[in-house]
Length: 160
Image (cartoon, rainbow, N blue to C red; front, top):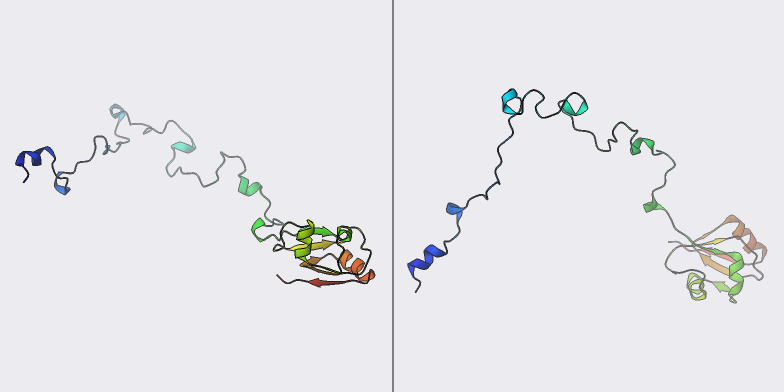
C-alpha cells in the first residue's frame, strides 16, 4: 500500500494542472499607438518604400525587380525529360561483330553493344553490313532500313 506522502512528491499530470511553459505566450505587438509607445509613426516598418506599404507580400519567384526566371525561360519547344524516350543506340557497322543471322536485344546485350535488353533499342545507319541478317529492334533510322534492305536482310520492329 502506498503512502499519502508519495502522492504529493509525484503529482499526477492532468488537465487540471497543465501550464504553458514560460515565454510560450508572447503579447501581440501594438503598432501605431503614438511616439511614446516605441511603435508609433512608421509602426516599425522603417521609412517609405515598397516594404512599408500595406499588403506588402511579394509573389512567389519575385527577384527584387529583376526579370524573374519564369519570365526569362522559353515557353515553347521545351521537352520534359519525364516523357523523353531514351534509346540505346547501335550502329550497323557494329553488327558485323555478331556472327549470327538473327540479331535480338538479348544478343546485343551479350555482345556488349547495349547495357540492358529491356530498354528501347534503336539501330542507326552508320557503317555497312556485309551479309543479309534479320534484326529485331524497337526503332530503325531510314538510312539503316535502306542499308539492311540493300544487303538482302530484313528488320522487325519490336512493339513496346
